[in-house]
Length: 142
Ligand SMILES: [Zn+2]
Image (cartoon, rainbow, N blue to C red; front, side, top):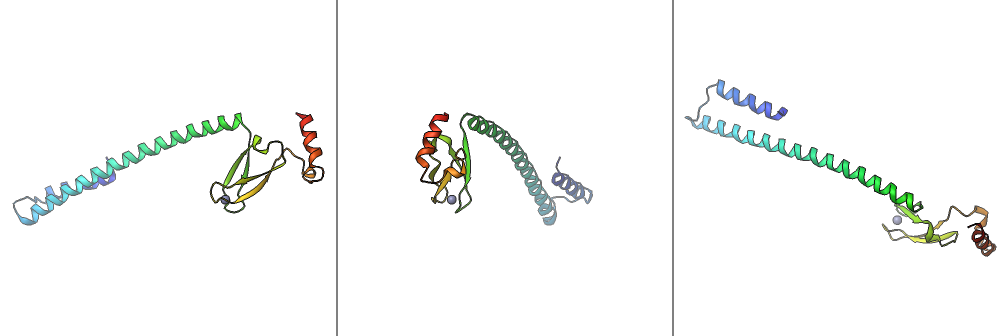
């Protein structure tokens, strides 16, 4: 029994003890009010139970989702970037680089376009002049 319902029971006991009956206008009003309060308390209890159930369900869905996410990210390599405009996290698949060291992506949130860099490229290989060379070296390594 909830705390709220306990208080309603106390009110009912109090009304009983005071010998409040429906034979006066005031008594009728009070008894009906207590009945309404009792119904409200029961309704609140139901809502609380529903919320607890929903909470537990969401936790289970969240756990399942984490498992699914883990399974997906295990299969394919994703690199995580942050949109410079809005800070949205963006996952870029390895094959999106298509053996380039950088690729332009569009933020799904704010539509800002920005360049992300392939972590597999060494930093000193970003120079455009020896980019062709780098590409060939990459091919050989695979
Ligand atoms: Zn953005």
